[in-house]
Amino acid sequence: MNIAQVREHLHRLIDEVDDIYVLNGLYRNLQSDKRQREEYEQAQREKAQKEKPADGRSKSLRKGH
Image (tube, rainbow, N blue to C red):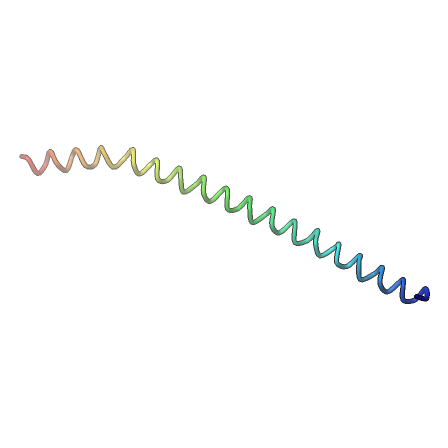
């Protein structure tokens, strides 16, 4: 290998490492977004469950009267 080939190979390796860092950053962002979405959805489910029994009781009381 001459110096030009080594330099070209080195630049390709640097580009690959750069791509890996970018992809890892994107992956971390996606994981964070997924975790936030799951936490939000869980909070919404819990909120709906807390509200549902109260609504269910009032409806059954209305039906009984």
